[in-house]
Image (cartoon, rainbow, N blue to C red; front, side, top):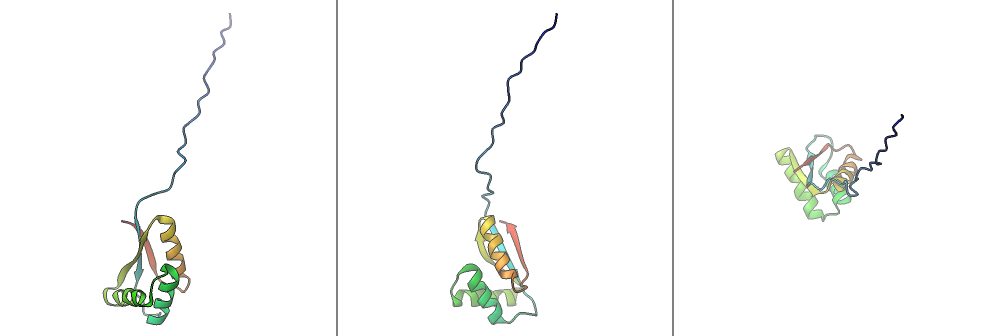
Length: 96
């Protein structure tokens, strides 16, 4: 007498959208290596802002030691951080 057991096939439910939707910040830190113009030019390239806005961020970084220069989703923050770091600027991406 042999008994055969049958099992139902289990298929896990996988969520399609696995993106992290938390807001993130890119913080730019001050250094003694880069000129204001280098920082301003790189900010314009990284976040597509005006010269005036980039100069304002650069001044805030200089005076306070750091400034949040971009807010967005993780992917965009990592892209901005990468562009800023192309010239050796120090950045940090953090969840808000």
